[in-house]
Amino acid sequence: MKKLFLLLIAGLSTAAFAQDKETPYLVKTYQSSEVKNIDVRTSGGGIAVTGQAGNETRVEVYIRPSNWNGTSLSKSEIEDRLREYELSIKKEGNTIYCVAKKKNDNWNDWKKSLSITFKVFAPEKVSTDLQTSGGGITLKNLTGDLNFNTSGGGLKLTNLGGNVKGRTSGGGIDLTGCRDVIDVSTSGGGIEATDCKGDIHLSTSGGGLRLKQLDGRIKATTSGGGIRAEEIRGELITSTSGGSIHLEDIMASVKASTSGGGISADIKSLGKYLSLSTSAGNIKVRMPLDKGLDLDLDANRVHVPEIRNFNGRIEKDRVRGSVNGGGIPVTMDANSGSIAIND
Image 1 (cartoon, rainbow, N blue to C red):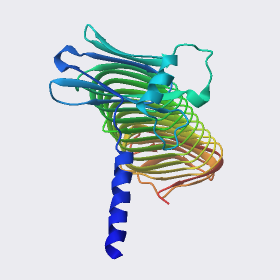
Image 2: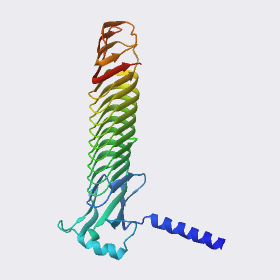
Image 3: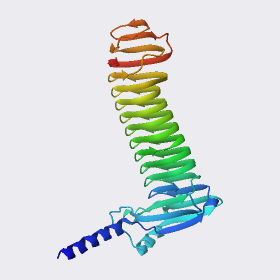
Image 4: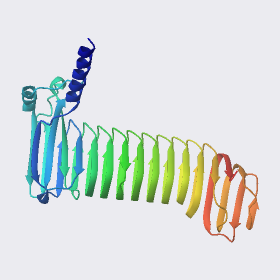
């Protein structure tokens, strides 16, 4: 009986593994030396492009029902439904074109609609032009002019370089190990960026921002959530109208503003300037006071420690003057709250 039970469990495990392991409906291969650009259009599935070494560029096509619930279609069922679709993969010059779309825009039989996903394994140095309205986009290990857009899913970006520009209106964005020029935005989710370097522009109107180990010129804005930034170097310009701002281990020039919460900041080393403002909370900062500073602090109440070599005025709601002869402009404004420095 025990042996039968063990065999049954083993059989279930094997079946589950076989079910999870996807087999592409279609695969095409090309010589990598002939591929410089990847152009993909699909209206019902995701897109993934991964850079890899080697001589072969491979395109894999995965097809599921749009209302997929774990039940796969047979090959004959797929071919029957594909009569309503244009599905093509071809190479012209040094560009691979992948297209999956409905032949008739008015055809709306959702029970027979398909989700067609492209997975491309390409040279690491390649440019992309990717568009989908029905799924997420994943890019990994690529360098080039990388353009991508989805209105129906998130963006997952790993180890990208060059000119990286992506948009989504239906999901979050996750960046790791990206560099050079990065410009990504979403109106439907949060953004998390880790270990990135360069000219970085992040924007969301539907979620929070989490930034860690960034170096360069960073501009990150949201109107729908809080901001948390850690281990930032270079320059940080960030704002939100829907949450608080928390800055930790900062060695950068900083301009941070919110109209929906407070600001807490741990400034390890000042950059060229420090500007913090909120209209709906308090500001609490730890920062060095041994440099030449020009202070301008304005709030209902301002708390500052005893400052050496200060020349100016200290009042309960305003501190204005120079430290150590002046230099780095430090401005803070808490319209309806308090400011506390090294408190």
